[in-house]
Length: 178
Image (cartoon, rainbow, N blue to C red; front, side, top):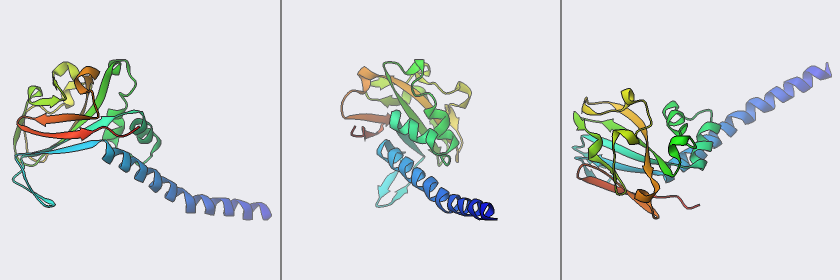
């Protein structure tokens, strides 16, 4: 009878403490993601917390070992993030930095690789690691959300921050402190 009591106690402790651990891990992942993300509004005007008239939102996410480990260690991490961070440490990323570009269209939008610049490097199809069939290029419909992993040579993204531009719109991403 005591055995059943101990089993019930262990089960109760697992149920009580496990969700808190998962939420804490998700919070850590979100913090890491926020530190490594720069958001760019295309054709939009920022008024306080509102953005008016934007055609699209592009986010540049810097992927390093900490973000990759946190993503794969968190059960609640989104699938798109796990898929794209999976390239970290692969042969294709040697002597290059890995980034994820996440695009959300609000209105119809036309995108070409040559419109995207990261640091001093203009994106080419050869820089894209994600399956080419999943990369949003050409005329894109409103309401599309897509993401793709790219590698940029280290020489093009040196320093404490990197510029990110799509067409004439640009922003800066500060690398996280080590």
